[in-house]
Image 1 (tube, helix red, strand yellow):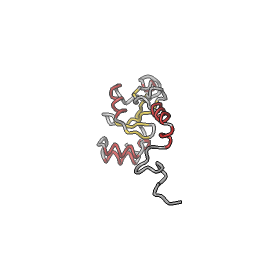
Image 2 (cartoon, rainbow, N blue to C red):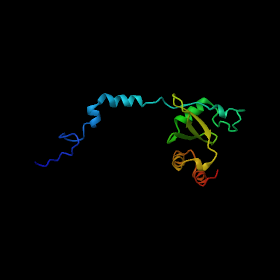
Image 3 (cartoon, rainbow, N blue to C red):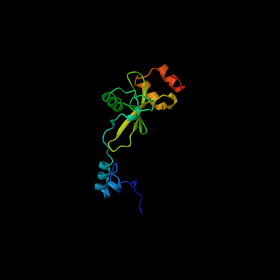
Image 4 (cartoon, rainbow, N blue to C red):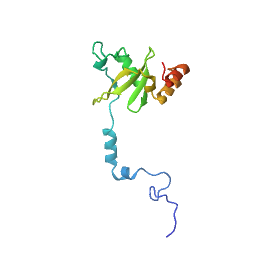
Length: 142
């Protein structure tokens, strides 16, 4: 048998493969999976735990629905959580609320060490925190 330059991908086609075997064999299955995996855009929903007088002792650092949605939309993703900083300089963490509408609630991060270093670096790069603040947060101070 003669040797060929065929890499095995695409079986005899020139150039890039023409799609995965799954796409070629089950094209409707692949597209169906893609449409089922789409979620609605994240939306901000304040938690009743952060309402004054709720007994939880942590006030919501976000003052309005509009502010919350803007912070959520422009936040920095780290896994399932989204981080941002309010106009008053408080770093907030948005947590998924386990609702079918992809809703998130937020709370202030009170322990600087709870902020992932990748998030701090992005806040610094975006000009949302100073180099001094970045160093303080990294050392667990602020």
